[in-house]
Image (cartoon, rainbow, N blue to C red; front, side):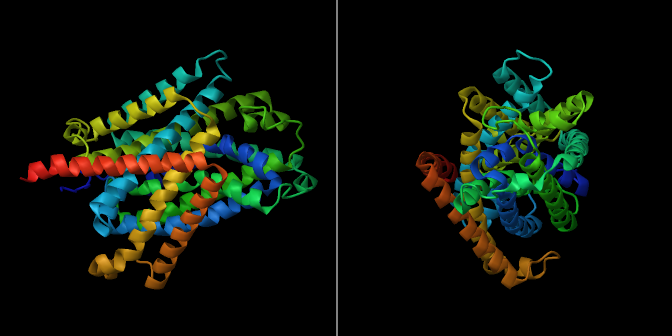
Length: 438
């Protein structure tokens, strides 16, 4: 089975990493999910995000170590195939693709919800489909163009988030945070599970690692800078939404941040805020297509997906067919329709399963890649490496158990996806790849 995953051109530098990850991780979810979590946990959402952020630190360590040792396009498949087996690598990516396609649908609908502010009466489904197609085309034209788009949009996003948070501080009242956990500690952990959706995107760096310049320096540094920005953004938004006096029922509004902003921001800034929210949605769609189309590409290179999906554009050197395939599947997910919370929960489960695979892989690095690990310029000490691997495994298993216990249907869905992936791999490997070898 052929596995390359090596990118032809390295075009993404340190700030390209930061803008790509921040745009992907923060994106539209920061304008929607905090209100959803306040409904679940009340002001305890602040603690929920702290818990989710602490868990994300662990995944950042794992991503940095694996990403610097094996920087490649479709890095999850490449790493897991080497450290576990090609079957495990395929299965992890199979589930991951199912999850991130739903993330794309969630984000595209969020884009449409806010665009309606400017153009009432728009068909939201049509808008969601159009934004996917647009950024699919942008990605075909090259990762350099993608990162330029991403950089501009993320800068606008960070400026407007800062204005919202700082302008809301004078209206913040500490009394509004009491009772802090109106539904008890379990609701905080339930919110933290869903809130982890907001941080899970750090692992996406593995998927475009082969296009990163100087990965030994830029991957760990890029992850660190991104994490600080993301934690500050989610913490600030959650604090303002929880502490500002507001008659708004978060159950009844589609655009919670926008409704709260109307309390203390003038109309002209509200318009700019809406534009930044639209840009945020665009950054996530952009980042998703950039990262996860590479998974399709490397699996096609390995012969497990049709070979035409491993074809690069002759003009732009991008995995054009894989980008088109991922965009098409995302459009289908949009047309299926679902609620925001359902999309987020399925996505979280898929990303948590990926983390289980990565945790086991991380643990095996010293045994499987002993010389590479010992000689690496970026190297977690063995005690820390093993600790991160075990902690990441426990966190992922615990969150999956909690989520499935609260909503068993999502566990059934994930098990169905795993079973379908296993069957697909068996059939392709036995009846197609084996015949090629003969």
